[in-house]
Amino acid sequence: MTRRAARRVPELVARAREGDPASVARLITLVEDGSPMLREVMTALREHAGGAHVLGITGPPGVGKSTSTNALVAGMRRAGKRVGVLAIDPSSPFSGGALLGDRVRMGDHALDREVFIRSMGARGHLGGLAWSTPQAVRVLDAAGCDVVVVETVGVGQSEVEVAGLADTTLVLVAPGMGDGIQAAKAGILEIGDVYVVNKADRDGADRTRRELRTMLAMAERHDGVWLPPVVRTVASTGEGIDALLAEVDRHADWLAESGELARRRTLRARREVEAIALAALRERWDQPGRGADLDDLARRVAAGEQDPYSAAEELLAQD
Amino acid sequence: MTRRAARRVPELVARAREGDPASVARLITLVEDGSPMLREVMTALREHAGGAHVLGITGPPGVGKSTSTNALVAGMRRAGKRVGVLAIDPSSPFSGGALLGDRVRMGDHALDREVFIRSMGARGHLGGLAWSTPQAVRVLDAAGCDVVVVETVGVGQSEVEVAGLADTTLVLVAPGMGDGIQAAKAGILEIGDVYVVNKADRDGADRTRRELRTMLAMAERHDGVWLPPVVRTVASTGEGIDALLAEVDRHADWLAESGELARRRTLRARREVEAIALAALRERWDQPGRGADLDDLARRVAAGEQDPYSAAEELLAQD
Image 1: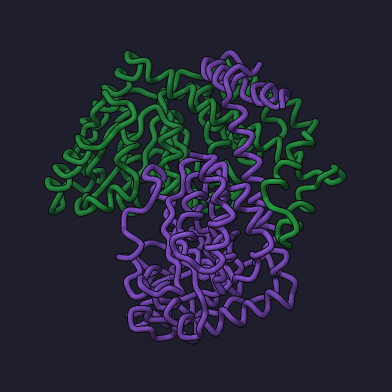
Image 2: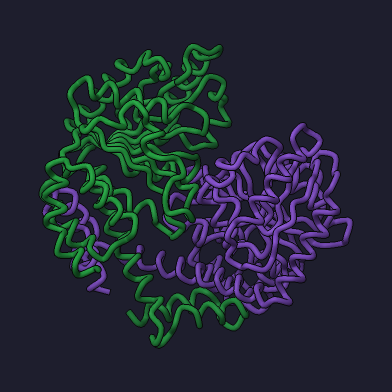
């Protein structure tokens, strides 16, 4: 099966580059499965990727991420862009996929051949998202997408990871969520390039926007130059979406001019290479018959017979 | 500074074992900081740990985790137990600590010398929680705690990680949150040993409990034997807390009798050893002057000059 499928990689890649949805989907499935064919796939895609702008979308549950993604995709389609959407759900590590069908989720664009939509569950293993997302992005990029949207369902650590993977990160908040401690707790002040107060027709939108602006002006930001704008939207009606897309374009221009784009992409590649190396190591450590088997070491640490540091050293001494 | 502090490790460990709060706190700070002294600390603690029952508490935001932890700690104190509490906040990777003071957070127990309370922010790096939590647990364990409660703020991936770190995992839900898709999406059906419907004085508590029971009976569970009970509580008044603690004790007995305790602790140690080994490798990869510098490799991958797999191989070839 593997050998037979492997012979088909060049064909799959060629078809995906032509924008064939089934081939794009198949390649992303290979990424999700951690297929041994990936090496060949990524080598084949290498020279065809790098053209897409990667747009991360994150924010707390209930803020309207799916609706906003849908509205943004509609706007990009009006501009004639080919769009890929990866909806990452780190909360479903066991299922190996999302529960909601991709078509149901993004009803407006389900039949548009210039829009690729894919839900991916983050795997339970360490570095799952860091490992699979850049490779899925590369597939969509090589398939000719002008923009790849990476939407993360959930909060917390995953937001930060998305920020590391995107060229431009949108952080969505809703009125009433601007309260200082909550925003700071969520770590959102450091990671956004453009902030969006969605559901801006609700009470308190102006206040939330003001508060966010004040907090952003005070926050210590790593890049030190770009002051993130705060845009108001009502994603369900499309209000403010064009203004939001204009800010995204402005940020993309700034990224290119300032050299920040290359810096971010190098960081992303760094995490990807690291994640691939770590996955290879873990596989090696799991092989039985090695001198210091990880399971044996773990049993000794659990029993209090060995400290975890010397166990880690024994593990590494053999590579 | 490091040399001077290093001389003090045996003294710190001795004092922590006597239950001196300042020494316990200092040791956990060393864990949070990833101090080079940790190796010596963990070696010194090794033979004194293993006695504490590790109780994980998780659930979506707003379900009453802090209040429940507070009520559970009160119940354990009535039973004369010494208790450690680690409140993990994966959503604050940048701050290096939690915003809310530990004392404010756990007002009822702030002055009780038999209760150690500590908030820890998860670090932004890969494996942060897997690396630091077991070591902080070991500190509290060696300090004579009968129970170490690990409460995770937030949802998603972190829930799963907590489940991997605890002997017994409590999953909290509130009435109205039992809706099938939501529960399955959060991946909570696989990870709990005891389920708690908190705020059980609200409408819909019975229904949520029934739904949870049905879903748990249908869910494929990895251990295959223990059917998790569903307990109703009103943490704010203490209602149901004794019944909940009785279920926790019943699970602890089952863990010991079935051999599952050793299995879980070996798994936990495995993750810890792995996380320490990975951290050591990353440090090595970051050192300049090596043949294939990770930054150089990342730049070539970002520029499309090299595929990420061959870059990872070059990185590993040098170790």
